[in-house]
Length: 467
Image (cartoon, rainbow, N blue to C red; front, side, top):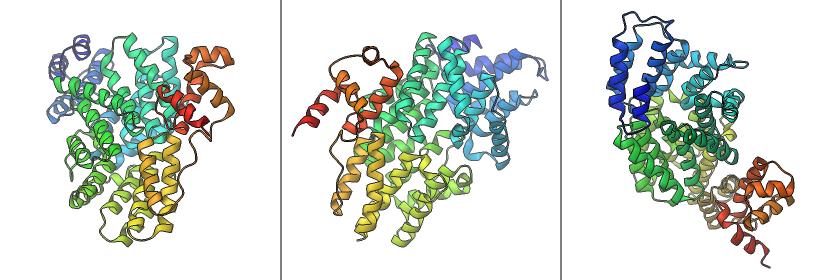
């Protein structure tokens, strides 16, 4: 185990780590002793190696080893739902939901992160908000650093989908600092992935591209397919945000080809809307329809409300008939709690509004375009709010208010000090505030000013004060 983890965190590859672990496990007398903590930890580490490799032959080795002992329920859940979620059974999701429901009051950080990982692709992390936050905070006191790293990035994935982007940056940065301190780069890629996603849709393409290129280089050289999927996802979002739909389609198909859900590629569940939109906008409507059908054949529309919302929207995007499209978008937006996923929800408003405008229904289009523009502005997704506003102008709707108009007095004071060059710690001392509060106010102010980092604050303030 030590050698395998050392290799993965230095210059080794997934296949070598897999051979070491599976070879060591098979040397144990069968059946393996379920009370032997070392064997169970070796199986858990082997599962992680398989997840990073994301290839059938690796998982076959894990399955063979796992049959030789009574696995803990958490490892069974990981193997059933996280390994290949597109092929999980309804009974697997029911078992996961029961485990999530039983989590309140659980103090075991390893159990929390394993169940969280099992539910990550199936949108179960919202029900685990408190235990994940609690586990992530453990890293501040030097306790359970490894689970704290995992919990930070799991919560970051949840925050990406639920639009909590300001706090996401803080929590993920804490996890990345722990990775650096513990010299554990392997786990850092999940954190860098969510930062790349937020950077991409907020228009910070330089940062997003740098993260994506690092992931491609690291994952490609080590045959870690899961990491190259992270890179492809980030590059898909960069291309979508820039309106380069051919590139977006190419990158989305690196995760899984259109019309299929590649085995052991859970990341494909997070990229359904990206692939469908890129396909439709590049004249590949048939590919979008094939992808929706493949998802429904896999039962993904029953896995979570978010996936049901996304699949309704994708079918509407690909529909040739305007009435059919309008019904589909309406079904997507009417999914219970759809607003919990603001970026996806706003994207659906946007594409619905675009279709209505082109169908000569400007009044209805304006409603959806205004809703999209408002959410994108609040999130700080500048390229997307610009696109919504352009569509809004095209159908005679009013554009956004002057940048900075919604700043609170305290945000104005913090922004002015940050623009003058003061650090968060210096601002906190000057205003008698916790540094984290200063950071939160700044990230809330960025989208209101139309900037993505503190480097743009000075120019934004000058523009704000012009008559």
